Amino acid sequence: MSAAPRLTALLAALLAAGCDADRPASTAHSPAAATSPPSRSTGAPPAPPPDADRSYAYPAADRVVAIGDVHGDLAATRAALRIAGAIDGADRWIGGKLVLVQTGDELDRGDGEQEIVDLFDRLAVEARAAGGVVYALNGNHEVMNVQLDFRYVTEGGFKDFEDVPGLDASGPRLAPVPPPARARAAAFAPGGLYARRLAARDVIIAVGDTVFAHGGVLPAHTRYGIARINREVRAWMEGKSPSAPAVIAAEDSPVWARLYSSEPPPAPGSPPCAALDQTLAAMSAKRMVVGHTVQKRGVTSACGDKIWRIDVGMASHYGGKPAALEIVGDTVRVLTADATKATEAADASGGTDATSAPNAAKPKK
Image (cartoon, rainbow, N blue to C red; front, side, top):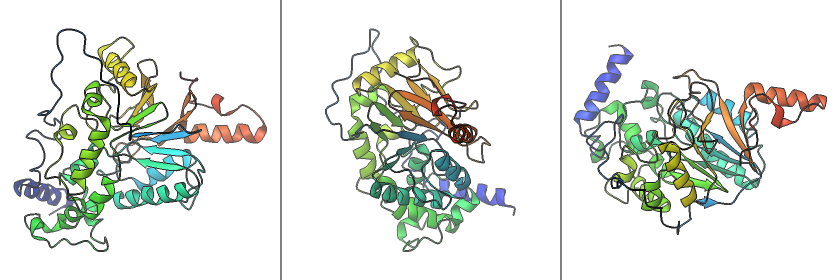
């Protein structure tokens, strides 16, 4: 049997074994909204309450760079990190006090997932020692893997976790799982080695006046509680709660939402931008950065540059080019390999500064 039929048969067996039992009744393409926030009234939506628990909020930094979905492509991940000025040719941290945010979806669609997760965890340690910070967030594909929803795992992705030291794939709870998937299931099942590592990551954070999430933060999420979402997802991934919080699996959850990512981009005054304004006001923020929805034109903004969409489809599965988003004070600009080379050339010749390089955006207030 060729690789594709084998993989199809494996996934069918996984679903038949009930490994998707923690997911809502709908599929990953249309997650259930069983615990979606109450429907809006016919009048103006109520303002979210003050954000009391701000444990998700971190201090402003001189320079923040965000990277979107990398989906198992180690080469694209390295390229994006180098564009960001975070690593050298040996994958060691050179970012100094840089704050680096990866907005989720390191998993699925590629074979380099374990190395990517390991790389970001190691860089977090190295950055801390240098006065910087690395925040890797959980996206919908991290959530799906902890749910043992492996529909987007490559054949190499199943094999990738067979060599994880100390991994016990022989437990009784994994007995229904087809043997080729047991190592991965042992790694990502709630309480598993890699599930616990994902549990150390948040779903939503704010750095200074910028909010970061995979899909998007909606007004209802601020009412539910941003810190509460992070806590509940963490407890589930650690194996301390019986099932995934419904708020994270809902169609409009912070890892699934696409309200702000449509084409053409929503304009100020539109319903999506009104929701964004309400969310930013509740979180005392100026802008939001999201991934999740591939932007075929590269990094794009909407709602008067209050939302930045940074999933450029850089993984080989999509064929896009690596890019990143830099925030320095109120200046927001797109970083690409071409722009980086142009800036380096200008610096070497004493020419234009970084903000006039290709793909540079004007200051965003």
